[in-house]
Length: 217
Image (cartoon, rainbow, N blue to C red; front, side, top):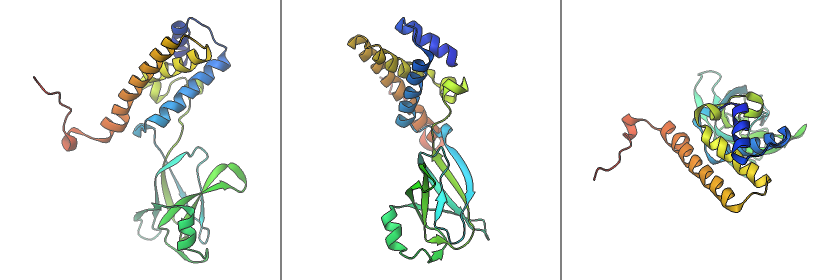
C-alpha cells in the first residue's frame, strides 16, 4: 500500500474527502503511535562517530530518540566496550573532575546542546583520554509515507497503518462512537499482530526458541 492507495482507502472507508494537509497529519500521528508501541528491529538505525580527547560530551544524531546500545572502540586493539547507561548525577558523582580521564565506561543523556536546544548530547564517564570510535544503535522515526511514498510499514504490514489513520480521521470527523470503537479495536488487533512480528518473531529463531505450536485436541 503506497501513499495514494492509503489516502484512497481512508476516503473510501470514511466516505469523506480530506484536505491533504489534514490527511498528512492523520497519517503521521498514526505512524508515531505505531512506532512507539512496537520496537521493530528492522527499523533500528546505527551510526559511527568518535569522541574527542579530554571532552566528556558526545553529540547525538539529529533524529535520535532513544538508545539501544552505545559502544566505544579501543583505538589500539579495536575491541568493543559497550557503555552502561546511567543518570547524569551518577557520572557527576563518580567522576567529579572532568579532567580525570580514562576509557569511557558509562554514558547518560545530558540534555539539550548549548547551540541547539532541540538536539541532545551524551555525557561520558570518565572523560575520554583519547579519540575512541563509537557505534550507536538507536531508535528514530523512519521517514513518513507522506514523503517516502512507500515505507517498511506500508510494504510489510499495512493494516496497522490503515486502521491507525482511520482512527485519527474518524476522530477528526467526530464520527459515531460505535465506529470509532470499531476502528480502535481493529487498530489494537493490528498492533498486537505487529508486536508478534517486531517484538517476537524477529527476535528469535526456530533453532533456539522452537516453532510456535497449537495444541491438538
